[in-house]
Length: 78
Image (cartoon, rainbow, N blue to C red; front, side, top):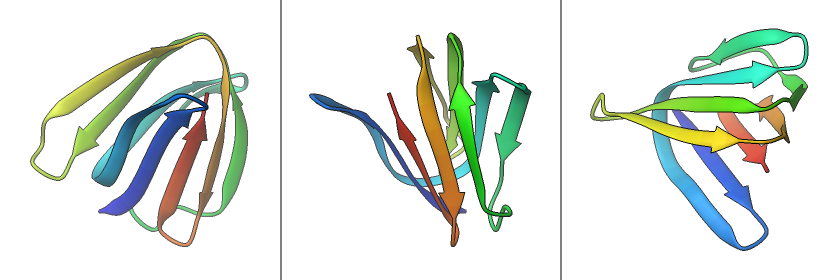
């Protein structure tokens, strides 16, 4: 698992432990798992798919954003 924050200026969509995060990036879809290599990516319109620590899938529709991954932590800013 890894710590994940998905937020925009006025709202937090997810803040907790996750087992996976799948994002629509400009360069193609990417899935983040625990201990993923450091990464910064530009997100495009689509749906974030988060699998939380209990195995529940949470979906967040997005227009755009930025993904940053490092040190078993991922942050999505919308």
